[in-house]
Image (cartoon, rainbow, N blue to C red):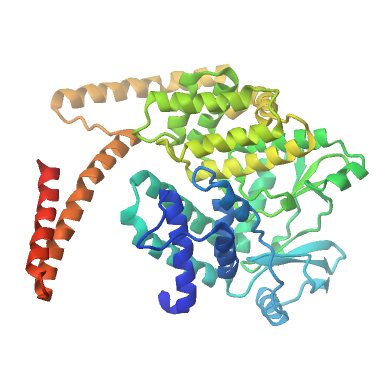
Length: 516
């Protein structure tokens, strides 16, 4: 795998990941190597290219690990690169349309160019105006190699992580690799677009039409959509579009994604959201799509309700169900986090700046508290950041939670899967009653026969894992010291026996103190 890279690229990848590792671990250095400064980290990411640019956009949401200096540089990294060479474009068009070129005209100058592909304006032979997304030459191969290199270095750093830090970083990298490999496949994006149109056909948004006949793994053909970027404040005001209505539509759709339907657009930057003259929205780019687990979605509903009602018990339960709480979190720590979040959600007099400062303070506190952010929650936070950022730009004292609550209240039965009404739910539960009684009888039988198997909860398993690792770490150090003492003795230099004996005693004491 390493033969695909020059030593310079491997070294830069190592420096990038070492910097992330040191920041996650809150360490000043490792073997004398310090983390890159924020500006230098940005420069390395841009030089490494596609995979690392995408990863930087994910890391830019992790205010629970990075300081504001790093976050500012990471947020400044945009997925905008030079168009692919004319030769590469011709090669990809020939591969995508080897049998017949379906366009009456094709503008070879791209409308937009990103690290994975670029979008061109074209016209079908029947006169239909379309947008054609062509992926870059060999992009899938490059992404797979980068994903392999990232996993290789993660294994190198793995022994130095605590389990919850390792899980957080590993979740980021694993999720990132899986999402990126899907994003480079235009056929996968076509499938995502089809699912979105089916799922959200009754929402106050629109999406491009698609033309499967002209689509493949290399190309995606959609109807050409026009409109204003959602962050084009001057253009929206000039056309007399009510921004309050724009925000209502945006919040309604994201509330539907996060809390009701669960099919989630995970790349919500302003360039992917167009505003029409009637304040309705057109959504673009379906390369990054996630389906939130039902348990996470319901827990998020509880979290929003608990924040609004200042219900600590509901908040703690929701945090645990979402995987935000590690096994070592105490009730006092959960309560402290809850109080900070409640202050953000309930204070209608908070300015935009103060609200964002409080939010960063909460995330910063998670560096010291035994909490973690599952990657699926990070994608939700990324969307929330977009909404909060747009809202605070246009509306004084904007508070997204308060705007989500009416949407949630109106659609709560649908969100909880109770659309069919009480009679249907009751009928289903009564039908299931004999099976419930049968299972209860089976449990009693297993108990009496001594065959009952007990499954431990995730929280308990985490606690056991931490305890075992706490024992194994000093044992590992002791064994390494013992082995090192024999190696020193083998070298036979001046005072080697004295040094070897000292190292042996330290290692033996380390093992003894752990096992006693």
